[in-house]
Length: 115
Image 1 (spheres, rainbow, N blue to C red):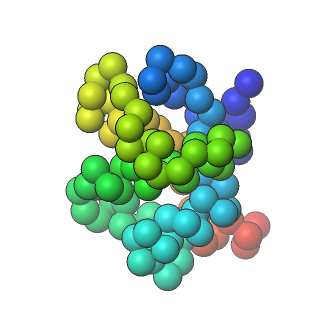
Image 2: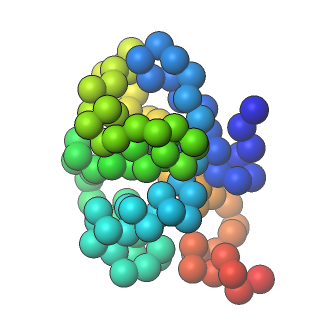
């Protein structure tokens, strides 16, 4: 069972249900991929430009590993979704929303420890 309060989501890839979560380690991976110096910069990278197919793979792979699945980026690149690229983009959007709670009055990701 997923816990949205921890940023977990469930998504169907390759006809199987997977749990995804952008843990702190997964976010650190993405900071490296996006060359971001902070979580705020990372969030801005997601909002500030269109995501490439490589970006979608990196985010999905980090989320799957954060959800407890031992998958390489290459494994994720071979996965299929019934809605094609739009389906992958939808999963990424849901994962980012769950992680950063966009639309909720939660403050920036860097404010998480300030409360």
